[in-house]
Length: 367
Ligand SMILES: [Zn+2]
Image (cartoon, rainbow, N blue to C red; front, side, top):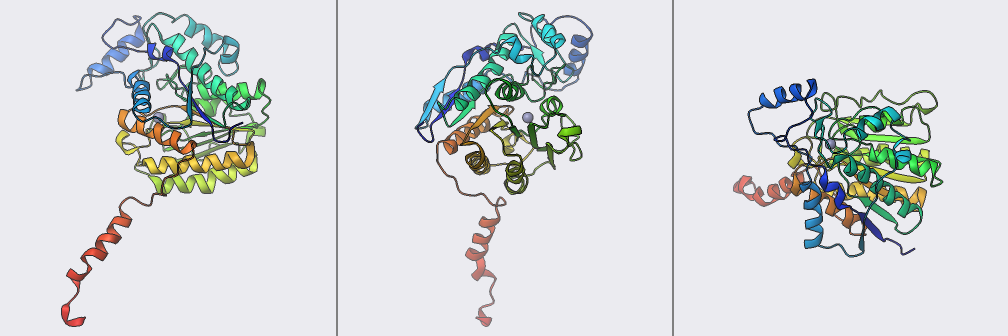
């Protein structure tokens, strides 16, 4: 296998998930409730998780191609594959919404006529990425998917998520691809409540989540949430205050994620990669350099324990500029490019300015 080869998995069928507030939705109590919420907003509301997110990433990649990056298409996940993490009842409920417009949750999760297939393709594209890495066709892979997945629970769609893509991929790696232990690192700004819920009692899937602390959405992910029974300790939450940036994230990567992985010895590492940690998304304060060094750290963990097997699955990130440049930065890092270690923003510049202005402060008589 050519060392360092990487692939981006993308599939245009995911663009058909396009909830539009201006069209009629399935009538009922939830529709009335959401209309009330939207009417209470001062501004015109648009569905924030829209097809333009993937287009922005693909546009930047065609304008600034990354040497060594191959693009592949995904596939729809089967009912059996989805059924490893979602209940039959839930899969039936989603199936009934095929070709309809409907609200699924008061947090404004919705489906449009193309959404069910798009969600099946999102989960299946994560599966295709994992398969390619296990089969040794690529060293690392990135599944560029939407709708995102990490808020989706076994029985419930939430937070713009229908199927839990990363969980479907982890379950597939365990049941079909020969992996005993799977580690999921979730560095989206929001806690991956659905992924935590799915593997809460499973000691063979380690779930580590760095996120902005409750009451930030979805309100879970307290440090004390560590899993149960045989799985106690295999859920690791790192809640951070709003505005946390590179220094905090890199410290969490080095002092929590890396040692946890060293103890767990995963056979593959999946990253629930959200890009809403960038300051353009207004919740946290991570830079592109920070994202790159975080990628480098998890890449070296993967080299140490599982022959480099590392798969990124897109979660959130709603500012198109920071989403596209964030994904681009991670892909460049996976391809071998190295970025400088970021410090606390501005400190190096203040030190340089202090040196620059120093003479202005000195009393000439004392020189
Ligand atoms: Zn998020």
